[in-house]
Image (cartoon, rainbow, N blue to C red):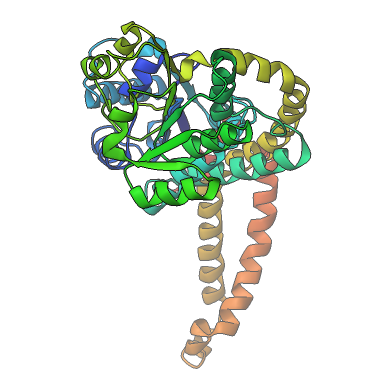
Length: 424
């Protein structure tokens, strides 16, 4: 059995999403906590600017799904020292079909703020690789993520879901383009992750050239700036640069705000022109109260809704097409997960039949020749012949069991089969 707890941009405001953002070190600690206190048997965590999602396996807790999910929510709240009720801000799912449907849609960009956005695929791969490396994944989650990535790749190849799709970075630049009336505005871009790089490239493509780039790794910002004919400044000087620029775009992985309201107010005190700040970071780099400063307009990722709505309308026909493909992939995965429910009985059946075949074979060997043929039972040839005999019996029985249980979909049939064939 698998489950999902999702705190995402559709149900939770940015203040809450940044509160529950988990870095890699925190993921390991939280995994160990859930394994010890709740008994999860598999885990994958995705934590981005738009969502924190917990995918988990709990085979030993079937029948107590609600109680199990409640335990995870409780541990998550305590882990982030959150005292209020978290339930109104969560999407909760159980069952392989429901959870895999959400994950498949996520891998295709259908759950992204910007429909068809490709960045979520890289984030999903990173989450999977991290969980795999740290031995967090169970067999069902492992197969589910692989199948979701396969689904995403197929849909991007066979639809136009990501063709002309608006990214968050592009939406930010469009916001700038509509808000700034100055002919040659001065820009400061702080951070050089994937989102920031895309923002800078989009600005450059719109013929904005007065762009300064600040990053903690100075060599990285210098190389990137040089490739576009722009200017790199030292990270320590970005606060001073804020005194004169017209637009500042922040996109870093800092857990703490990079500047306070009092600092920014002091820096901009002498400036008469407006400053547009676009903060694409979660947790946010710029405190929300900075919007109270005169001549400062602050925008965060949740303020890019216009681009989101436009993108959704533009992609609607492709969404319908993608959803049909997703149903096909879901059907295949659902068949696989249902058949797994028969696995314990099938293994038990094969074991029991093999033991019977061995016992009967030994019993029928002439007692006078047992000593002579003692090595016969240890030989490869004998074991291969024995395998063929028991496979003929077991394969026929397994086939009939699959038919009787509708390939693992009939829970009542599975219950009866398990009672008959599973060892006590």
